[in-house]
Structure formats: C-alpha cells, structure tokens
Image 1 (cartoon, rainbow, N blue to C red):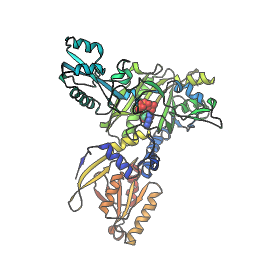
Image 2 (spheres, helix red, strand yellow):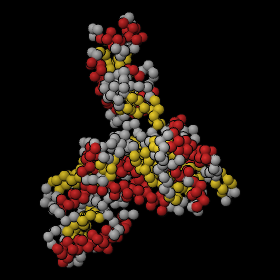
Image 3 (cartoon, rainbow, N blue to C red):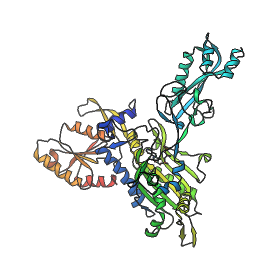
Length: 547
Ligand code: ATP
C-alpha cells in the first residue's frame, strides 16, 4: 500500500530531481548558466525524444492526411516581414531604471492602496503629499478638512504568480503600517469584474511614477511600456550590414506556409491535408521563467491543416482541439489537469477566426500548453503578395482555384516535458518487504514516453548463472526498447532508483528463472505488485503498452 503526498514545493522537487537524475541541466553551467537556456541530460534527451516520436507517429505516420517536413531555422528575412513578425512580434517591456531589471508589462500587476475613512498621524499627510504618494488634488482637499470616503495612499506591485493577489494585499498592509494611516484597507482583488488590479499595459501616464518596481520596492524607477521585438537577429555571410540581417525563427509554422506549393506539387496531397514539423524555435523572452516553461530556445511541434475556403472551419477546429486533448491523455496527462481557454473575439488578430488554448495546471498556475488557431488564409495570402508567387490550390472536384484556409495546432515539447513531470511526480510512504515504512519518490510516466521502459536486474551480481540470463534478456530487449541493466545494491533499492526516473517495469532474474521454468519476476512501478512472467509475455506487454 502507498500513500501519495504532494511535496510542499512541487516545482522545487521537480527541478531538483531533474538535475539529480540527469533530465535537465542549466545550459553552460560551468560558466554560471545562461538565463533562458537549458540542456537535456541522458534521461531528459530520451524523454524528449519519446514525446517527439509519439507526436510524429500519431500526427504524421499514422494519418493518411498529414505529411512531415523539416525546414531551415534561418529563412529568408522577407519571410518574417511577410508574416508580420518583423513589425509585430513584440512584447510590452518595462524597465526599472535603478535595478536594470526588465519586466513584461502584461506580467507586472499593480493596484492602488485604498483606505476607507482614513486618519493620518501628525505630519503624515504632508509627507505623503510631498512624496507624491497621494496625488496633489486629493491631498489638498484632505488638508482642507474635506474628508473623502476613501483615499489612495500609494501603489503596490507584484509579478504574475499564483500569489499575485496575496502579495499585493500583504504589501498594501505594509504600506498602511509604514505611513501610520488608520482606517479600513480595501481588499485588493484580481477579480477583473471588480477591477482593482491592473497590469502595466493599462497604467495611465500619471500613474507610472507611483508604481513601485518589484526589484527595489520603491516607486519612481519604472518606465512606460514599450514594444520589444523578440526575434534573435544574426548576419548571414561575411558582411555584417543591414543587407545581411537574418533571424532565428521564432516559430516553425512559417516553414509550412513557405513550402506549401512545393509540398502540393510533390507530395501527392489533396485537400484537406496537413503539413507538420518539429524543430527548434527561438524567442528573446523578456522574462524567461518557471524552469523550462518559458525559455529562449525551445522546441515546437506544429501542424498546418489546410482546408477548402468553404469548408466548415469551426467543425474542423473543434475536431483538432479534441484530437490534441486525446493525444495529451494518451501520453499520460490526467483529465483533471487539462482545461480549455477560448480567446475572446475582441482580442483576436483581425484575420483570426478563433483560437482555443489547451491549458495545463502547472504548480505555478494554469497556463497555455497547446494553442489551436483558425487562421483563415492570411499567411498564404501574405506570402503570395510578398513573393509574387501564387499560393492557390486547384480543387479537381469543384474545378475551383482558391487559397486554402488553415487550422494550426502548435505546441511546445518542453512545456509537455514539464507537464508530464508535474503530473507524474509523487512522494509516497510505502512498506518494504519486511513491513518497515519508507519513503519513495515515483515518477508516473506513461510507458509511451518513459525514458527507460524496463530495468533488468539479476537478483545477485556474484552468481554468474543469474547474470548470464539477465545479460541475454537485456541484449534482446535492447534491440527494440530503451532498457537499463542494474546489478548493484539490494533489489529494493534498485526498484527505488527506477521508480524515481519513471521506469514502468523491472524484471528480476532469480533462482526460479534458472532452476525452474525460465520465468522472471515482473514488478510494476505504480502498484508495486509483482508476478511471474515469461519472456514472450514480457514482449507482448511491451508491444501493447509502448507504441
Ligand atoms: P505564450 O503566450 O505562453 O508566450 P504563445 O501564445 O506566444 O505562448 P505560440 O506562439 O502560440 O505561443 O507558440 C505555440 C506553443 O509554443 C505554445 O503553446 C507553447 O507550448 C510553446 N512556446 C511558446 N513560447 C515558448 C517559450 N518561450 N518556451 C517554451 N515553449 C514555448
């Protein structure tokens, strides 16, 4: 029996496990790391490859209507002009002039600290007005003895997190104490219908100077938000002038649009059909954070599904959303952690017909995992205009020529990687063979993506007859699966080491194997149950579960 417990700080536990067991390391760690870049260690590289392979198999190989491509990371700079990235792939940036920290304005929240029926200690009101904590007009009327029902004594700010609201309220309490103001503090809430908390993109120009910087805690050092282009620039060729500027791609999707005609001409595809690709993308994120959730170099799995101009796009959109949800469940993400977010119509780009994000409940909040966008035929039209090459499609059945519309499911491999670690991680109290209670860390990864599928363990390493059988089985399994051979330490300890990295099964070669019927002990990770199994049964189990 086991009692699963969630560790107090799940993210800390996951980052520590990822480092300890070789899933993820900070990039260039011996030089102090580079913010927003990560390396995947031996187990991480396997897990990531399995996520990619599952997606490619299900999205491309097992479908008759989707083909795959691999386009280059650096493309002609005109691609990014036509796609709108040069002009518009920006995030709103706020600088702190004192600390030199930079923040994404839409992730920096602030609120006025409002006190009902305020009473000020001697000299406090004057100090607040002089320091600009209370606006002049409001302050003057207070001095005149005209007491308004409530007054803003200053501002508080906090970065986006699960605790934004709590943090703002704590800071508001501190401010009230600091200025010795009596009266009732109005509770600050992120509930948008009440609207007390706003992000910096909505700050009025006369408010900015009152908002404290998260770095210093003091107002006066934040700048107004400005647009920051997130594309990494480089130069192609020997010259480093304006004519050689190129970009590392910020998404893989443009490869599918630019190659659309080539695929139609060579790929024997007929509408509706999709073009998929997996590859690295690069974004100079202002605030990379939450481990691998938001990094500057990451990997995307995107697919452009082209449909006729008069197809029922809404139906097709819904079908792809459902496909993506089912796929996430097929690699082990629980329904309870998944939800949908439909972007409000007024926030969509003018060409977009609708976007739905599949959200995942990460320890730091519910966040976008997979975006599924109905983009009309904007991208193909943009490239047709900019390149002068037609991007239309001739439909044999209707004898009509048109520029196809597209549904685009786009997901990040690293975000899935983090999601499976978060959903699968547990610390449990279990009883060992002798009944003693001990702690085990277990990673409940689906056999489809687990970095090691089976660990092969000879009961004793000093018994050559056991070792020989174990080595033979290991070599046989290795031809088809990622397996691990481990002969050191007590069997219980070897099980624990495998539990921690998510290995679904261990097989132990014991005396019964060599003296009786050749069966092994199969130990299952989640239930920790053991049973005897033949080699044929083991291969049948793997064949069914690892696909
Ligand atoms: P966000 O709003 O979180 O910045 P986005 O809407 O800009 O994401 P898209 O441009 O739709 O993201 O990219 C598609 C997918 O690529 C996202 O759903 C996400 O899984 C992944 N992704 C985007 N940016 C990053 C990043 N900086 N690090 C890791 N994955 C990312």
